[in-house]
Length: 68
Figure 1 (cartoon, rainbow, N blue to C red):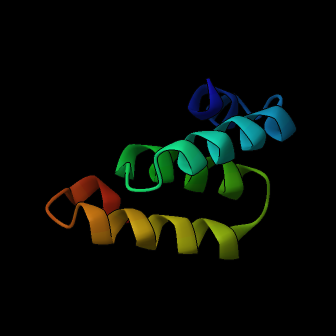
Figure 2: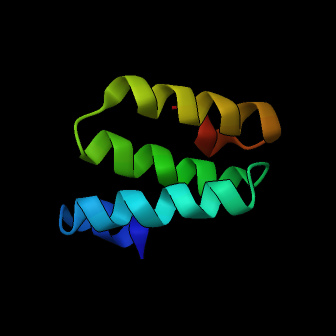
Figure 3: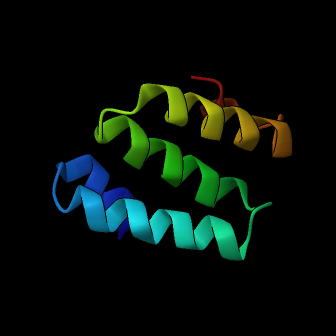
């Protein structure tokens, strides 16, 4: 839901809350971190998005789609 909201630029406040909760529950889940980064970027917080995607890259360096 959070990723879809980010892609559609809708309900970004709720999407950010959902993504943060997911990361809080599973902080080592690279997919949740990737989603959080997407929502942060869509919300205009590029610095936080960069931090989140860097964390995801550390957890799954073999995934090329995390290298953007």
